[in-house]
Image (cartoon, rainbow, N blue to C red):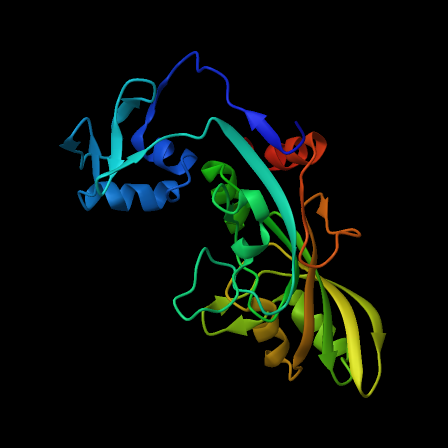
Length: 252
């Protein structure tokens, strides 16, 4: 089925414990190493603190803080058109809207990948494939993310040049970006910007650094996945071509 891939029997069920935890969607491999070193993972009832531990995914019982960890029987890949005013998180202690409330029958099956801030909208990928999610959100794999930006005021050629070359922020200089001007006037300017990083509120902070306040930010593509005509608040399963293309880019 499109967007849902059955996980067949493994010819070799042996794998590193950190990879198992990542594939189960618990945490990234680096995060898994931290959990192991903190003594929060048990295998067959025994606390494991040695990095590089090999397990048999078909026979060993893995637990995280006493809760069983298992691989899903199938991987699910979805894309949501996130509306503004929703948090990209599983739940919120203050009762604010979260994207999982839009996911219908899949709301307990998948998790969002990467960031898209509260006021922003557009393409958000959700999956239960932990390794896929980790690689897709890690800047090392340089997966392009394209946004439509509307900012206040006239954006100059110099502003565009600075944004394209990278902006010095409090958490370091951003990588070079690709900009495509759509329109500009004294009131508003509109442009596309493509980046492969995923820092918190990165594009808004980049624009603020050149004196421009973003009034609308919409992500329109991630890699080969395009938002297209998907309506706000709606989701769809990725097709096999989209999944295969992304996995190839992620060396999966």
